[in-house]
Image (cartoon, rainbow over all chains, first blue to last red; front, side):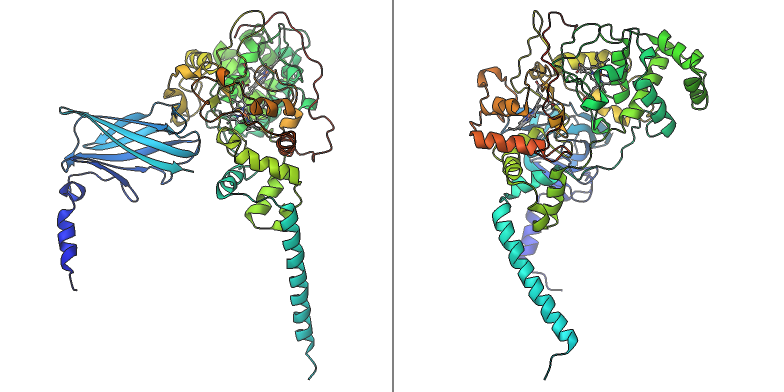
Length: 134
Length: 411
């Protein structure tokens, strides 16, 4: 097999956080939020995020390639409509850097912002992503 | 060479097909409104109907035919009330789509809220205009013991179950513990669960809208074109510019949550109906909520919404988004019955008073300033959510009488 040189270069550029074995990954189809040195990978437990129904998220949180140690909170809102969720999700630790977030509900279709707030000894770190839920 | 019979048949079929395609094309050009991709998404979300039957894991009698029968009997049983002649059916009348046609319910006292229909409750998450109950069975207990309504108590219910041979015999086959030995709250929970088993079976039939939706999705344009143009235009407003589908979402036309659309929360004479804000408190305080001992789901998975409810100040004056199936038959409208007809409802949205809207909803709702024709279109669409074809308004939109009242119950 012929290895193209720039592939090699690229893979060296990919931060070690994303590939480190100690960094928990929630599974197939997970989405990733990166704010060095923090990485959050998350996926809906059922595979899809429904509208108007409770759902659960499983997430892996890392700091510099190692399982995150600290407090994790999750919230969501619809920036265009100026409202959040009607529920306060519960974050349960499943193991080092692994979390289960239950009680989520997007009660309307449209653009939702999902926010992970990480607190550790260095302070507060906010990682957010927006997506069109329908 | 003469064509073979098979060839003639195929030419004929081709001709017929072409003519049909032209006719269909022409009719779809004249009697089908164009929908955007987003509008089509919402139209699709409003079905399929009827949805699959759901069983309530919190009610072990859910779906049990014996319970459905007992619940139906209980629903019209005046012995369940300590008020002469009153039963559930007194306010939730079968001949009026399980409403009373009054502005607000009237029991021993005049109540502060409009009596809602009991159709399609099996698909709800919250019950009552303020969502003070998290299950249909818990909601069904409230009127039995409310002083302003049936004013009964656990003793009355227990006596009825023990003395009436029909209840007694049936229940002895369904319970591990004799009714006489159940505690007060357990007896009430039992009555609530039987009533819920019956009410879960009340589902509105398929409607002209459902025929249209299914035809549109399967690209059967000829069938879709049978849906009146006015209703189609109304549907376009509902799912598009009007943004109605954001709250009135899904097969039942409700997202099951709460909003403030600027209907007055003042109760005549004195008092304020705080809506969802008070509803959340009542829910948390109730021994019958799903975190309590009477939830039959041992996993408590069905209690997630109650456990993780977020107390929001914006909930002040919010009310549950009502489902809209069969809405033409359930006038008057809104939590306080203040709008008499569907036209008044649409005019309310058309001329929204933005000062009345609080933070929430304000960014979705804005006055639509609809023309009279557009108002007519939206009304035609709303009427098409009932089984009776539009135009045949046998019962729809009637109000028995506008109730004048001078007292009201506690909210």
